[in-house]
Length: 251
Image (cartoon, rainbow, N blue to C red; front, side, top):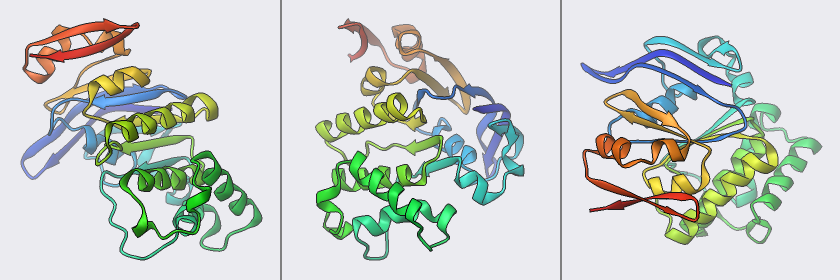
């Protein structure tokens, strides 16, 4: 689904990604973890072509990223950035309809409206359909953003720190929703996330980044060990097993 080979990126004279090799399995929930500045969000931006890579190869469904037509790529892959500042006053339905732009170019068809209605229903937003987005809470707004991505109807969904500004309940509900997208709809979901304990409860795979490289990857059981996380974060950590899930305890 997503195959990355020797991909690099620098900001000025500073390397952010250094020869990254990674394969992301289709139909799975994958978390990018690691310290700040490790290259997680940068790689997500390269996969979504929000910024260009400098070296290496990045394939989406077997086709090199640079050769994709922009409209065709927008039908395969969607991206929710960490910070979105909407400058216009829109209703929930109007914002969600933007997800159909690659198909409709602003002229919504019957099929487009069906996709919008389905996304609103899936995210339980019917009561907010006609409410302006500037009247929503942070948790409600994140649900609307996810609904917009659902309306876009891509196989691949990338999210950069989707739990930012959410309380613990909202964060758990968000992760449950993303898990459902994988299990119910067969989506390939990749998130950048800092809370490794929340990540380990929901994802299928974890990719740990350090100093612009893939430091370790595998299942949560394989990555959530005291040795791996201790070296990753330069801390002394203890791992507990609770109901078959790995939990990191901080000293």
